[in-house]
Amino acid sequence: MSGLHGVDKVRRRLMLGCGAVMAASWLSPASSSDNRAQVVGAENPPNVRDIALRAGQAQIGLLGERGPLSDCWVYNNELFPIFRARKGERLRVTFKNALPEHTSIHWHGLRIPSDADGVPYISQAPVQPGERFLYEFAPPDAGTFFFHPHCNETGQTGRGLMGLLLVEGDTRGTPAADGDGLAGEHVLAMKDWRVREDGRFLDFKTVEGASRSGTFGTVRSVNGKPVERLTAPAHSDLRLRVLALDPTRVFDIGIEGAEAAVIAIDGHPTSPFPLKSWLLGPAQRIDLAVRMPKPGKIARVMDFRPSTPHEIATLAAVKSERSRARFAPRALEPASVPQPDLRNAQRMTFRLQAAADGAAMIAKSGSVEDPLTKALLDSLCAPGRSLWAINRQFWASEDNRQLPPPLAVLEAGRSYVWEIVNTSQHMHPMHLHGHAFTVLKSPAGEMRRYLADTVLLGPRERAEIAFVAAPGAWMFHCHLLEHQETGMMGWIRVA
Ligand code: C2O
Ligand code: CU
Image (cartoon, rainbow, N blue to C red; front, side):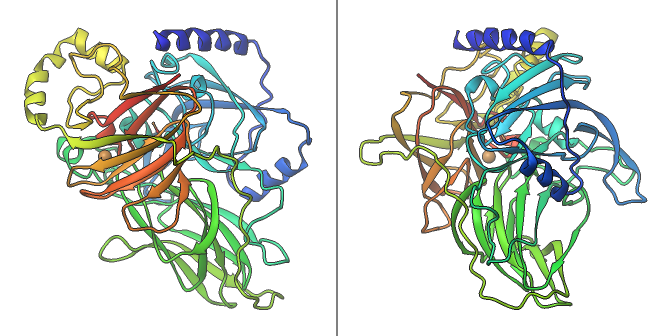
């Protein structure tokens, strides 16, 4: 009903969009600094930025420069292309699907209208092979965001289909500046690959993984490479935008050999606090300000979670005129996200559960082999089996050919406090579409409150988030993609 209505509206927009001439002013992802120049030089009044985005196949080496190529699926022929926009600027993204299967684009973490949110059957019809689709929205918040399909996500993102959207909008200039400016800004987009030695992909989804902590990749990467190597002037400050793009791995990000502060979480500015180490689950991001060490010294961005810490990036300090000043990173301009009214907020509880009858479900879903049912489930982007649930509800099963009922119906403009209870033995990075919520209580005993779009719950942990409900239909799901695809997904209706 509301789904159909949404589809209609978007189709109309799509038709309008098809005739539009695309400026295709697309920026190369290679270096962030040349993109920046274009953004800064753009006209000041709110304008429209046209973006041409094409999902297609590309041969990319994931196993080092001399390694074999893999059949990747990417946007605009490259791995993790970076797009920059200004806060409030209107983006008109003309998307073309050149993949062999249907897809859609979800703009993760952006508080944009529901009909641009990219969820098949909730906000739009899937974009079939060969079709185009127009996404139009104005990002209301500055920050580090990314986008990805919301269909066969393990398979499509597993082959690389993701991009970055960096929204700039701090009118007070660069963050982390200590008077004479920021030496630079870099992206660290981390993702593991499920590839064999010959470059072929392994299964992205396994029952073992889906029912536990997910199926891990065989090769780690950052920006598509084994390690990122950066240089910057000694004693200068760098901004690092760190993104956990793996569907499975949880990172524990820290820095060795340099002072560092967290300046944003999931894109949203926080008042800077010293980084000890920070857990980043699938889809989560942090922005760091890092003070480069003395000339000749190397600092390292590390993942401390594995028993042998893993090196993500090296930051080599080169000679500079700069003298050593106190490290006092400046706060980014705060986001203008509506503040929830905690006193009058309505409370709701969501329990994350292993579907007790998971095994029975698999046995029962034998009929999924029936071609009609299979096609239907596939077109709904729904799993054939349910291993996980939220409040005993799991995303479409064979009995549930339409959208499942919403997990909750909320009132637009009203404040809510959600208690999220993880009753399972596994971690769940829970993501709510279309909102930036305040994390009131998060598991790790973090004392501070912060804005986020994804909250990571450890085994048997609980978290509390608060937000002002925005109108629309919004997904609430685990971003460990195998959990999402085996039931841990639901939607809320906000009217
Ligand atoms: Cu990045 Cu539905 O999520
Ligand atoms: Cu999960």
